[in-house]
Amino acid sequence: MKNLRILQSLSSAFSLHTPLILTTPANNLFLQLRTLRFSCNTTQRSNKNGSFPFSIQRGKRLTNRLQALKHLSFSTSAMAKSKFEYVRQFETQDPCLPNTWIVIRLDGRNFHRFSTDHGFTKPNDERALQLMTRAAETVMNDFRDIIISYGQSDEFSFVLKKSTMLYSRRASKLMTHIVSQFSSSYVFHWAEHFPDKPLQYPPGFDGRVILYPSNKNLRDYLSWRQADCHINNLYNTCFWALVQQGGMTNTQAEEKIRHTFSADKNEILFSEFGINYNNEPEMYKKGTILVWKRVEETVMKTCRTAEDPVERPRKVTKLRKKVVPLHTDIIGDVFWEEHPDILEDEYV
Image 1 (cartoon, rainbow, N blue to C red):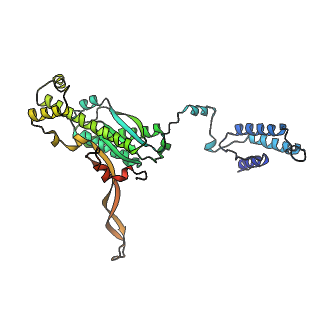
Image 2 (cartoon, rainbow, N blue to C red):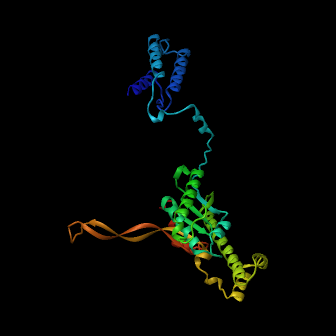
Image 3 (spheres, one colour):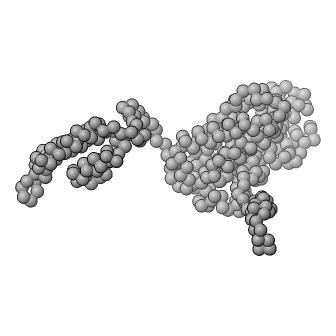
């Protein structure tokens, strides 16, 4: 309190128009005030009576107070700064543009080798896809500003609402938090989906941040990722049918379908292996969309009712927002007409 009174009296004595910043180290503040005092005493400005604004006696009092301030010891943690703190000036400030959709997409690093080392079923391993979805659900539950996510194969895209101020919209913070949360969740839930296959080594995921200014841009981005899912899955389904059922080597199968179109691949699947691609699981063909929905949930709650005034445990049904996985088309308009709130700024 004594330190604070001295600072306040100095501020009043110099008629400072801005409050003293108490987080400034004592020595630095002393130098600032001493410089200000000399500046005031050497200024040739005078008041209406022709006298200088500071008397000799007042100057002595100020000098004494400045000397006392120089030896103050500030014990608060806010004062704990050092000469090395200047290095913070080298940090990159990377805020995302305001009023834009922030999309963070992560991809598995070297997942071709990872899937082989862990014996993933080809062309699709439902356990691996469910694990990706589980990790993405964890991310959405931790970051409520994510309004929709889309995943396929070893990638997932997370869309934050336009008005989010999470981490001051800093791209590096958003990307690293989401990617690290996803990675740790993937490892944490591994045993639930692969109980008979221990994790041999940690998986890795890279991430990137993309900004989209309009709803159309965002929809086109998600459409692009779903179209990519369809193209890759049709190729992989045909490729692995040729290898697993057709007895071809990987090189032979790749050569056979190298220059084929979608219709050609469908024909190979149906004519040679009796596989109707349209009957393949929607999760494989369309990927996974995660959205927020209000669902009814029954919980036990101690309460009273109009019929029974005594408080006792009762079953109560309430609405709760929950992350729900969908496997549907998002390229057309039907999905967006059924979920108009996703593209509204005040969503969630």
